[in-house]
Image 1: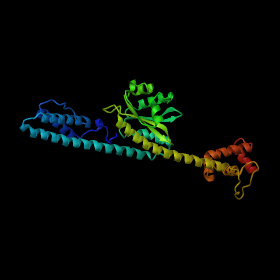
Image 2: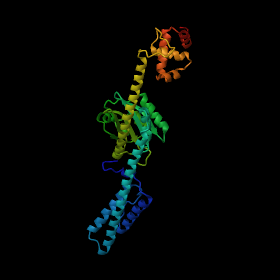
Image 3: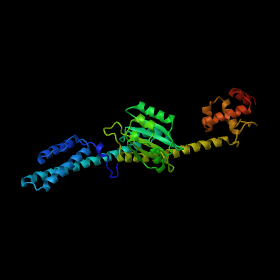
Image 4: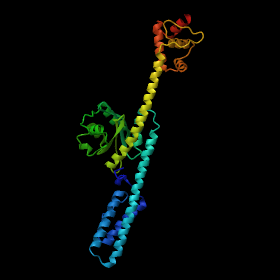
Length: 356
């Protein structure tokens, strides 16, 4: 979507009926004005509007040259047809813009189901291919290093793997020499043209891709750029991306950024909760003992609970569930128990416990 809110002109296709009517008008104008006009394919908005504009200008020029009175009705009718078809072409353009917005919204809605940042970044590349791009790269920025994470090329998965491998083997540095450095520094989407000759691109990646232009949009979280989205339309009839593609990609990136921030917060809370659980499990304040459970001078209260359950034949997973701790914490307690009891294995520790 560009500044006017419309989709890119050369990518909006007209209905077959409307395209035929525009072409028919062009042919009629050639006859009525007795001049040649470039009447070709009018399947997209841009060539259709160009032809309609040329017909209008030619008809107005004819009116300005004082034509014979019997020609005036024909010229007036021609101008009326031009205006009517221009209105219909503009309507098609607006309709496609609405469709683009809906595609972006649907893609972002599907991403909301992501539960981790890793899952979100992986799915973001796939969803970007549903909004008008055919090659999408998702990467993160780690200490001024451009880290390639996921690339989707539905028409050539092998190329996607090759580009990821090349980027990971020698992660590019964002030291100001690459265009991506500007996107990160200013947190603003970018557009790169003449890629194969551009001195500010990663030469290895663009050589593999063969692209001539691409758009970049920043992914932001916590007030800084944490990742990048790259996209192009290499396999489309018009290979060049433009300011509209940049705007659409940036709009999508903003939605991904919001979801990324939310998922990161939830992951942080989960990690904090797990840490608090581990901390509580390691506190050496002895709880009231169960009937029949005696204290041991070497073991903490929690370790005593663990070895008691071991003696009952419970596996680590069952112990973790009964004590509301993680399985990793259970293993840590068992390691401490073996060391304190000078036991070589679980069986020896349990035997010591039952004996004493």
